[in-house]
Length: 428
Image (tube, rainbow, N blue to C red):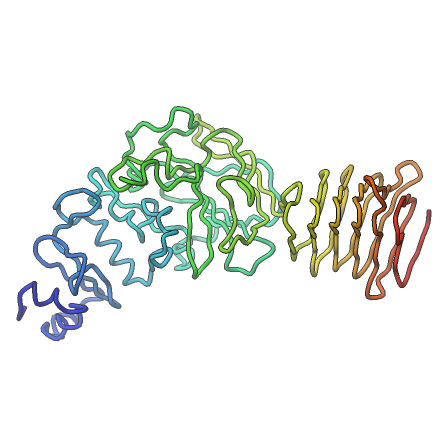
């Protein structure tokens, strides 16, 4: 080269200048080029590790994560080569990326290994592998319905991915489930394999269920079972992480939804309406077993929500005071023992509403049920549907937009409006 290392480091980027000094005949035979300079990697200036198209640059040694000045192992090279393949940092440098640091090659998982020196790096996160068509179709398992007793096994050479999409959002918001143990290059992810984990943790430090939350391109995140980035944030780079950064479950039958800690909310507190329930670790088979609910609502519902998928309420449900539950562009089926609406709350459906026999509606003051399409409440003589007041008179049932109301064997008590509608079939 024509200059010393200090000169190249003084540039904003060294790669363009280096390319002008290397004959094109040297570069042309190769698909990718690694530029490795002597001694320790410099993490600022023109020589900082970076990739540009089919080239990347890095030092012969590195000093990261308290490893000391050691040989730059394969992890650092894999990380920069990943950029050449079009793989970005998972959260674009946002602090949210800290939760996936050691689980992902394209964060600092490239530094995993016995001395955090990159000798045994983490793998590429599932979403990038799927995006690049590096996963066979038979290894992708979309979860389209509520699921009970799903078994997720670990297979290092043939990993299985379970895709759980939120019904309320477009294609770019979903979850990927995977069982991750410690074979091959997974051995040091996210920490030293022989580090003693929390004694109460059923899967200890062996691994377990990873819940990847995808909001591409805004970020790819990992939901941590204990909701902790670190047990010792003041010295997080040097600690051995075990109970923190922990896969699920941290106790048997753990639940994870929009209202647990940790939660499944997307950015800006957007609800996912998904619940992973009864997460169990089988220590004999090293399998994960769980149930999945794709239409999960907080119960009692404490905050107004609008959903865009067909809702089925088959368990007793309560709506808190001053809260609205709105089902837009979809329908609702109610088949539970009781539904309770507290003061000044409402249940609104813009599609068909079906209320099955024998249900008791307990209505607080100034509450209402609103339908913009069809309202069907079909009780029987032995199991009528009751609409009754909790304390004071409640408002009523409203049928808008020339919607149709069909009521059979229904008892409506203490309603100020009873039924306000355009077309009406009534059988009491």
